[in-house]
Length: 380
Image 1 (tube, rainbow, N blue to C red):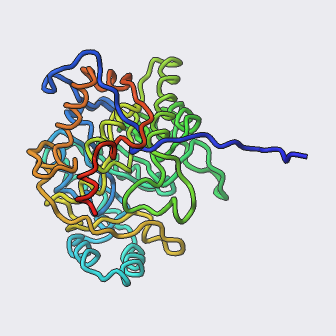
Image 2 (cartoon, rainbow, N blue to C red):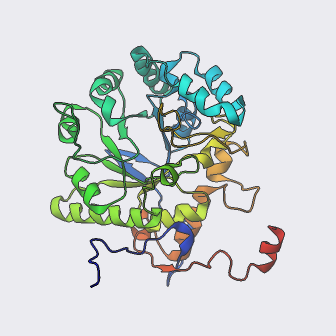
Image 3 (cartoon, one colour):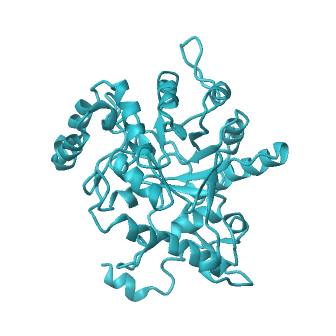
């Protein structure tokens, strides 16, 4: 007798396994529109900086806003636990590998100072920047009113995995539909990887969905917990939820691919798979202006009992301006990200991000190695 199978595996895809097909018509890259809109705000580049302490501080948030993107400040990190966050960040960056996890567990055990939440938001907005900041679902009820009072522009509610329905011992957990009604700012929620969860969150009234569980360079969730979906498939599934919700309501919810993007090529494939924008971590941690000083770490790293994530040394490569707009001084695709997107859209005949969603993709696992004999030799 053949044992019944309760589940069947389906094939899922990562960025390295697909390629974009050139269009029948090509477009001058300078003529394509890469604007990104969420919650009534429009940004000239579809790039968000992840809510990680090594990536975003108030100064970095202001700079990225001036360059056309959106940085998300982590309101449960060192910037709200310590008045002098810079010295703490330097301590983390300089610590030996064998000491880093217990050190971070100690640093992040300091209580969050509620007055610093408003201070950090005011610091960003006081310089004319659009301010986005993130909290975890368990702390949203406590901190959301403080962010509203400080005049936050966009609130991000984010954890490794977020759903519209959560079972816990608490009498009444976070209800996103109620949060969306009482908050004066639009809400972005993450992270998720499935069509059903994305659709359920959209029906709660959120303005944006963050897609991705475990693909980040500093995240070890997939190794520690075994949980995650390859990022290309996850983005396509959540984008399908967006299209279904749009048909049902006429309301458009932004899809933001969060994590796993190492190069301009990955960014282009994320947009083609249905993302309206991408959230970047390690690639922006390499900027001269990033607060991590050439290091990067996951926000789950300091967990007191089950740390997930690791500190990685990204190095410092170039100014943020060069990473985003060039000119590129390297050939591996980590600089001039917007130039890569514009060029790919031009080759594929897409005038806008939404047209890029309709570009054909093919399964091409050898796309990066086909014909690259001498490049492979040089990489040995």
